[in-house]
Image (cartoon, rainbow, N blue to C red; front, side, top):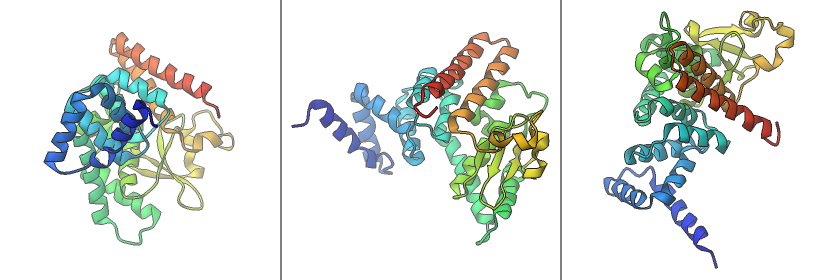
Length: 290
């Protein structure tokens, strides 16, 4: 016989197929059930929102938003410790540390809109670099995303949804947007943590190439990468030319915020984001395959 915990888990798992139901009646019933059973359903929804299925994660986060269950710093810390890292979920959870009540659904829809426009312009079959050219047209010309200028050090330039609002940001956030749009059309690109500038990597051809979102999507061949490697010689730069993990990209985003908040005089937030960097590093060190 199953114990109470197993039965509760079964009942909660049975609700998963209903999370994306368009019926107003079903959605209202779910909200009422989750609200009445918050002790059980909040952890359940948080687990789904931080899982690796981006579709389910999006719907679970929408329900959390509707219910007002927001603990920005706590939720991000739990995400770090969960080690279930999904890019879009992680970056929106980072945003909630500073802006706890923004609606991630609205910004996911903007990313969907950009992806839809890319699909409209694509001709099948499309070569890899042609797809990048269309992404560049949509993101940097039609939607006018660009690198942050005089206010480069403003913390909002490191916050994904604020960059989606203002259409300007740091290289790393522009790269995250580029990757999220590309993945919506089934084009798999990777984050590249080069020391000189965060980039996007494409490994779909025989030889990899890179995309500089700060420069409006400039395509860079491997032999042109020296300028982005700082003092690291190209022949010794293997690890810098390979993809970084979601956790490594988020840790780099947090490091940027540590410096930006310190420059703005907000020592409390600077120390908070430093604590997240330290937690990412602790988790990495303790991971079985570290």
